[in-house]
Image (cartoon, rainbow, N blue to C red; front, side, top):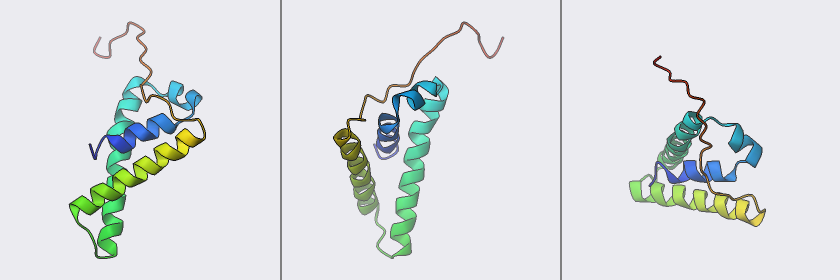
Length: 94
C-alpha cells in the first residue's frame, strides 16, 4: 500500500488533459515511482530530525496522500486514476 497509494493519488489529482496525454506504460511507471519518491523523502526527513520509525513514516505518507486527495476533492479535481490504454496494433518486438 505504501508504494502504490501516493502514486494513485498523484494520477487522480492530475488534470484530465495531463492524464490523457500519458501513455499507459508511463502511467504504470508513475504509480510506484511517485510513491517511492514520496516515501523516501518522508523517511529521510524523519531520520534527519531523529524520529524515524517505519510505522511513523507510513502514517505520515498516508496522511500526506489523504490531504492531497481531500484537497483535490474539495476543488472537484479528484477522478479515478485509470491509465489511458491505447493499442495501435504494433508490437515492440517485431
